Length: 101
Image 1 (cartoon, rainbow, N blue to C red):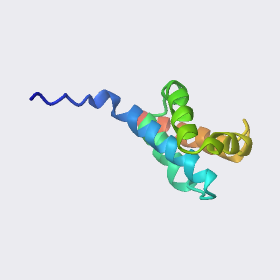
Image 2 (image 1 turned 120 degrees about the horizontal axis):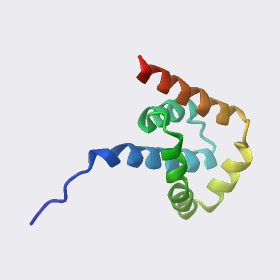
Image 3 (image 1 turned 180 degrees about the horizontal axis):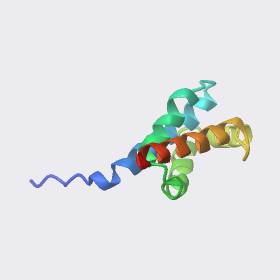
């Protein structure tokens, strides 16, 4: 039996997707995980906004399958320009600045 080779290049995407799903589902349950999730997402995405956008369709579909109300409730609480949106932007900028050092 041959073991599938793990692709380290996809590890960041897997971490981003898993944490994003966890964030949506826990937010629906009333848990605020921003202090953990935002820096974690910024770190694993490497500040790559395109990676986050690329993963969102899968994230939304899985979160919806786990908790149908999770995505809608979180989207309503996290509009563009919201505190969460600004937190993600700030963390991504910090992550990009740290990589530049």
